[in-house]
Length: 286
Image (cartoon, rainbow, N blue to C red):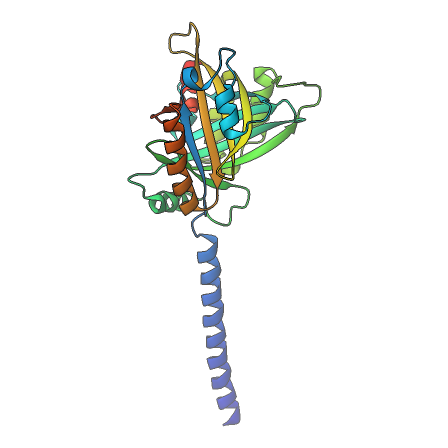
């Protein structure tokens, strides 16, 4: 009789243990598949004619308003096919070299449009497509421009720039080879196994663009001012993009400081009430 009760008790304990293990496993799976927690980057366009001097650098008024330091020079190019197949799937591959750094930076970014301010829906779509809070090597960011928001999820790889000075970039084939070698698995297997590497291998360089970046502050937040001289639509000259931006991890702060920044640059006569499309312009014009 005792052995029967022991067997029954053991069965109950085992069942409870298995239930507990099942619940814990479920909790771990749920945690691993939860949505990413994004930071915020507010980006506004400024009028080149109003904000820059005749030398193409920040005017004394602009430099003084943000306390801008000296320029950091950056060489930037993007890789995509002539038909922009990566971009059509929401992916951008950027290759750049900062003059004061000893490595090349290769970033792979996936973008999700945010409709009617519904950030949660974009994060959920990203989660369903494999971007979760457990992806420590990816960063999620809400890019907040004048009239829209975009969820950007990116990862960055670095390669030695030994033998290269300033903002010099490698030959196109060499830079592309680096980008292909470092391709993350999520991009490589996006549409199908090996799709990303196959598509990127057939890509070409779009650029380069010689960017000037200045760092200052606005209302206590570190603020960047970037000048992008991009080939114009006709290919006969240059269209200069001037962008001011700041980052924060706090949604409420992003909203409040964005309102303040818009009012400030608008009051100075610098604001261009449009969204920043510099990546798209480079892909289409080079």
